[in-house]
Image 1 (cartoon, rainbow, N blue to C red):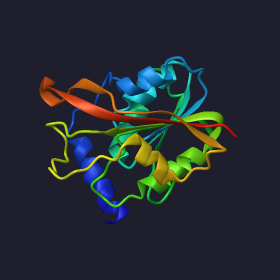
Image 2 (image 1 turned 90 degrees about the vertical axis):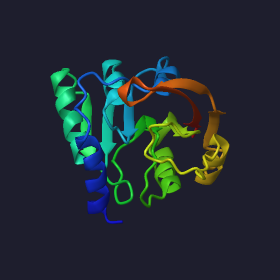
Image 3 (image 1 turned 135 degrees about the vertical axis):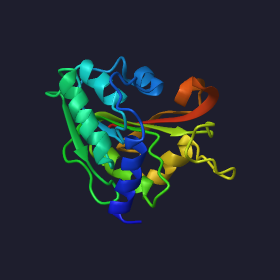
Image 4 (image 1 turned 45 degrees about the vertical axis):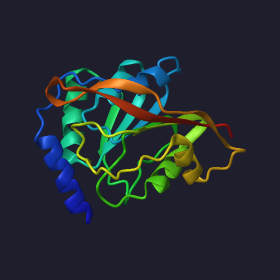
Length: 208
């Protein structure tokens, strides 16, 4: 599928939702990053912007990217309204074709799933190489299907964090897996509906 068609699809997804005024961060980001000193962060697939704003409030300088121009424009306006525009750079990227420039102390990729062709391993490998020494790549994937997910394929398979890490082919002399597990939590979806879901959490640290 072309970049234009992919963008149109995700623009439609976000445009159908009311613009968030106070989006919440993902719980796995909070638990993984709360004790880290702030630096430069990259939020891959920033969506509604809850993670980006949370990081910016804690002193991080955040490059926030999404394939959806609607999501990016809304986040830029939201960061400005919250007085955080000096810490947030919102950029539109189709990660199939382009990747943000710069070096980062944190790259966060939450639920970077799409129904379209995307070499996810290549994107995450590029993200790992964009880390500065000591920086961390946080990958949080779905480990189960929520009732409100756009993907209701009963045959969907969710690779384990260790499988995702192995698929990146990173040199263990320069990158180390700090965390790879599958915690469960109660999630809240549209309309306040709740369900127990599994997250696949992977943290890779660049050591050299």
